[in-house]
Length: 291
Image (cartoon, rainbow, N blue to C red; front, side, top):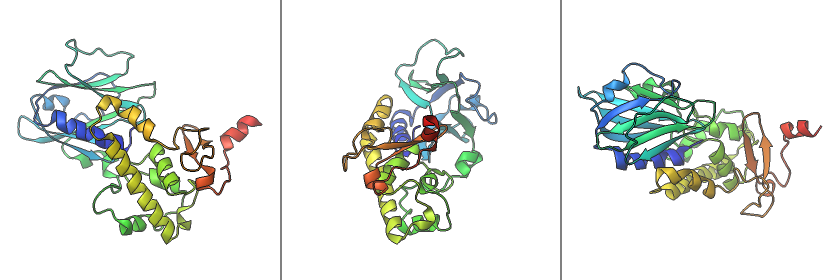
């Protein structure tokens, strides 16, 4: 799933390639992709892109309509969605079908982008609204972890009263916006902290270490992604991860074997030496399979 660093890199890419250009047409191809109907997508025809913003994992393409009304095309790529820039776009119109293409945005300059989604579970979402807060997923977002005003005091206050495992807290978009499964693993590894550690057990030093690991991990990932073409961002993300998705490989810090805990639809990775005092975490799903 694209997370804050990749979505921020896509925002920078689109800011460079879209702003100042005119939208010819936005064509939904998959029935499931469009989540709003007022205003209609046709209101974007002939509009000029004026900015590209990000809200957590949402991309926000701002366009001035023909009447001067500012519209927001918000995109959430979900788990298997992606954005593919095409220069030029195919001349033939897209056909609905079983392929990955979900939506096409064509510019009057002949270029544009496709939104695609792999697999059969379709969660990629596109909203056209007058205000980003009209999208429930945006309205419920917590603060951006890289915002200038999100300091240690703000982070500490955010965790006060939380009573759950820190892995789940980091992934909660209503608590902190933009962090998903991969970067929560990376942050906890950098902080040398168990993903199962309860938030209520964090002392002042733990909270400070977690805050620093979060900011550093995300900033470094954004810097690595800066200037990389949209089509190459997935490969860059994978190459930059130290523990997530690397079960069985040696930890780059201590050399211990990276282990995994599996869930029904996801998994987490961690280093026992760096994060859990050398003790493997219980993997209930794997234990059931071995019985």
